[in-house]
Length: 250
Length: 278
Image 1 (cartoon, rainbow over the protein chains, first blue to last red):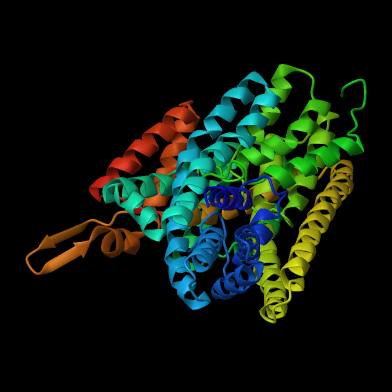
Image 2: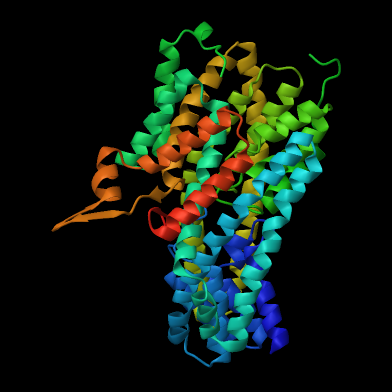
């Protein structure tokens, strides 16, 4: 069982890691596929496939945009099929386990994204030195290493000791700390957007940034609209502004 | 104009595409999302095009900013950015602002288009189809899904990247010969800034969930006061403070640390709220 638990947690890690050549998110992390593979590892691929398919039907219209998703479906799929096969549950019973586990996984995912907000500064330092290899390494490795314990340990524990082990692990963390990490994560994109403004935020053009802000605050956060409306406004703007006036320092 | 023309080899372009496919989300984080991955994708290009430490450093820095799009269809942007860098290295007058303006202007619509087509259309349709086959106890279901979706990802992103590069080259040549580069830079910045404003509200998701109670009256500072003045005000204030600090040459390191401490303590005490799904 230990060997199978290791294989399953390793699969759970790989499916959500960067190593699947851009197919992890769309293919290997879907409960349908994850369930089939987990079933294969546990010696019952048919049941794995059927349970995985049932779990996946819940998440058929599931969309993740910009790193935020209502559930971590890979986590739900791997753990749901595992308990279904090891605990001899029906697909529907497995679903009852998988859905809350998916929420928990999304929680851990946000946490990882918050913790990883430390690393871009390392890349900045290498960029300052003109060290291309350093920038590449920072992009490749730190998050993938950090992901190991966040993926492998919870899945391993669930396979070995059942779902209660994981919720027990989480209850050790005080709620205040979880809230704090969430808020810190929610504020950090301000740094990224601020850096972008360093490149684009010409004084004369800054009203357009506020226009985007008002659009999102009052009307819609739809990016397609922002970009198409933005194009219309830009076309009008450049007709009214003589080009020699545009050459202005940032 | 440099003496020798610097040309990208096809192998550089392929390396660049492979890096994007492998590592687009390798360091996905709240601060810059795919920003470090964009710089990483540029590494083979930068190494070919630039020689001095200053040029390499500047190129890395300009691609380390906030970036986020749908990775498959969004690869068009990467192709265009590579074309822009190639022209720039050969002396074309293409500013940092032009490059980042175009990137930001394009990342929104391609995210919208890509997510709708891929996550909203291709994935659910293929899943329904293949799950239907699987429910009859046929392993063809998952096998078909794996093969078709992998092929979709690789073919579409490859085509997107290389068409972006070709279009970029053509467009730049025409714009430069017509003396239109400055106008396009301005237009791209206008679109980019509007998109950045929307992105800010989407991603900088901080609230002030404090409730003041006096007698029977209880007022929520966030939803009853701030949202009625200007929705998303805490996000705007945070972002503008960061921008100010960056302009005053405060290191990004320090800013991240301050934000982390303020967010963590504020969140723990319940003065600030955030996260959740937007």
